[in-house]
Image (cartoon, rainbow, N blue to C red; front, side, top):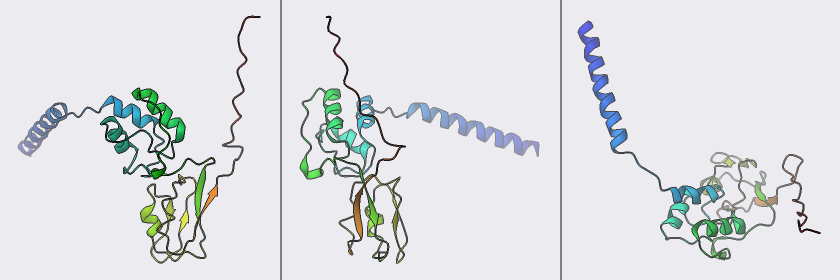
Length: 184
């Protein structure tokens, strides 16, 4: 019995040493520029930029494979922030990737018309749509980013865009103008 316990302890120690060495030897460092670019992106993971998420888009920008104007959810503010970070000139949003929305929107599904085809579920990049095959679907509005990618695949046109209503919880005061501090 004691020999079995000592053998298992020896095997565990060897595996621990091998895993510890591998963690140090094969450590992957991430590019700090990619991290900074990714932090500026809206993290909607909508895919409108033609990349499968914000991190791959950030990597493409850092590698010079993509322009800084492909993110409709980020809008002009994100483009300007990316231009400042990378020392580039700001560009207008590329219309091939979508348009900047004046007001935040979400989608809703007319549940009476929904046939349960699941095409909208497959198109949603953030899993904001619930439902099962041949069952009614619904949208979790708190999770919906308003990318509208679920609308084109719907065969019965039962998905509609609605503006997000301002409530006391998300309403913000406008920033007041700062008085000039010129000597009088």
